Length: 284
Image (tube, rainbow, N blue to C red):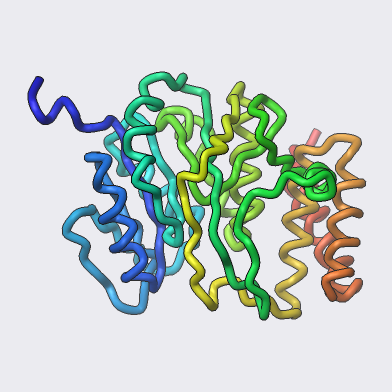
């Protein structure tokens, strides 16, 4: 067997912006897989070069969803590993993925458990998929039921996902037009569409990825932009929730009010979401 035959038929796609040090560390760690690595620089203030990866620079800031799509369109691998730039793989991930990848079917989508810590506002919180009864109920109400159980009706964590390249292309990739500013809904919408196309979601419970605590990326403020989250929740709920959609919208709105968001902003967000759904509905 020649050395080239050991190379994984895999492309790792990493969107990033103004995090040169973090993405260089991630690329160095992920190169243990001996696969293609594509870094999509979402118009960072200072362009950079990474010797171990192919760097694609966006001509303007396009967001994480469109950056993923751009990287995936350029990928040569049969499988796509979509990674956020603030995660780090464990040493055991290399041997796991070498054994696991050949067993996957085209329409199986894999999400990996994320552990570590994260700064959100003034609090430092554990960044780990939670499985308490309360969190499970909230996830169901919000339309993102993440659990240890794999199957057609679940969701998997978004910072580390594995897709077959043909399946990802058949889905049209991330819907950056609708959810471009909200990675939470961007990924759940992608997974929902995968399920609608016959996909099966698999959750890997072993903690193969650690989330880095990078301050500044999750600061929350209350402004008119907050209506965008309610707009995206409304669109996603109406598209995917059926009769439960109104419960999902109300539950998310109640949660946002508890967090300090003004009711007027939530009403505006719901109205914008309804307007988007009505505009997209084909005329008879």
